[in-house]
Length: 116
Image 1: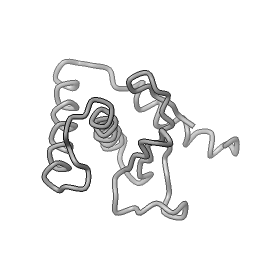
Image 2 (image 1 turned 90 degrees about the vertical axis):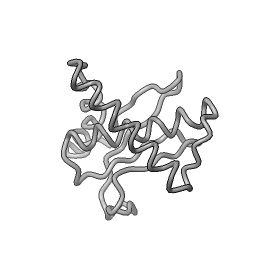
Image 3 (image 1 turned 120 degrees about the vertical axis):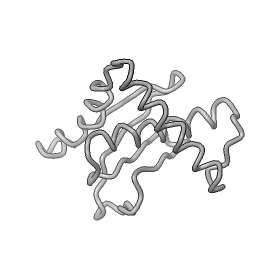
Image 4 (image 1 turned 120 degrees about the horizontal axis):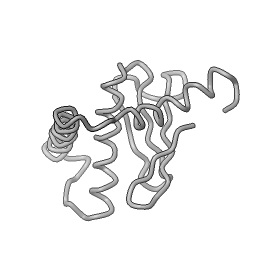
């Protein structure tokens, strides 16, 4: 599986399929207490990165009491806009996001090799 760090916490990043109990109408989801981010396997690579950034903001919101309520549509829309803006900023400034993509894809590689 892939791992990233958010505010000093080791977060597991998992690519999930519908048959694993994941609602594929969603792009991703976070479990802030189990330190897991799940990302829809059907997404294109760039969409996976954007989704990861979106889920990271959920962790920041929890850790820094940003006041964004994940259950409130307006707050969720703001999280979506912030993640998109951060992604665009990284692209415009040649920030290499490939390590994030590698973290996302690490789980997929191991799953294919049967080593999960």
